[in-house]
Amino acid sequence: MRVVAMLAAAALVSTVMFTAWALYITLVEHPARVASGASAGRAQFRPSYQRASPWQASFAAIALLSGTATATLTGQWTWLAGALAVGAVIPLTLMVIRPTNQQLLGAEPLADAETLRLLDRWGRLHAVRTVLGAAGLLVFLYALRTR
Image (tube, rainbow, N blue to C red):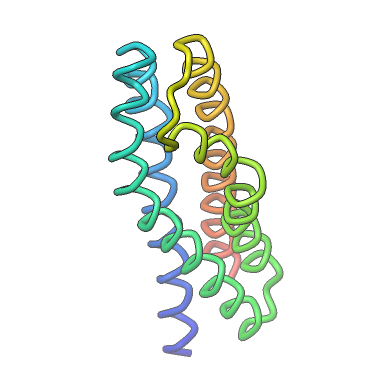
């Protein structure tokens, strides 16, 4: 039972960290980035993305793995549902957001209108990541309540 508690705690804590970080980026950092204009916004995107990306990916992966392990050991489907919600950010990022990331991170110059369009698209897609994290967190909290 101790292993289950540790796995559940890992799932919950990593999901809280992912969601809090994603929420901050969605509500505070990215709007400030866009408000600073195309050139400054793109210049700020690169170091911000490079610092946040490994952390966000790690938190999502830990939540996916520990939530799935908790579901397997307890037989509670809610742990799997939460794990899949948070874990869904990984394929979303790799398949849907990555092309936008690559354009914003690329060395080739972009027109201001194109930069702002890409930043706007990135912000909307990142908001989906935030919602998935929050959904996973709510499901994990429900799972804790119903054990």
